[in-house]
Image 1 (cartoon, helix red, strand yellow):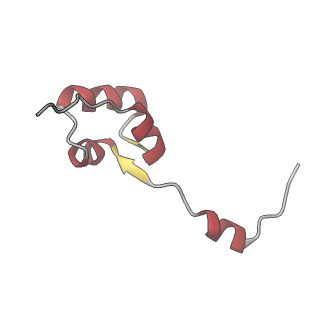
Image 2 (cartoon, helix red, strand yellow):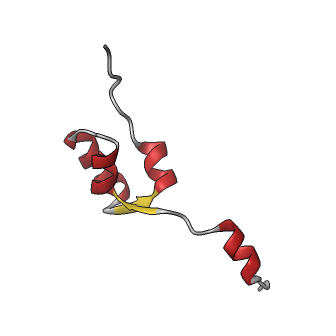
Length: 62
């Protein structure tokens, strides 16, 4: 089954932001162990939503 997509509809929603896992790890200060885990799980590139939902960071205590 096919459906019609209007240009205005697509522009409003926007595209998903795709990140390099290495860039994401650097930006969010993840350690190399966590970066390696994300690379195994998601590959070299993933959407921002996938990365945020799968990344875990150790808490920073004062």
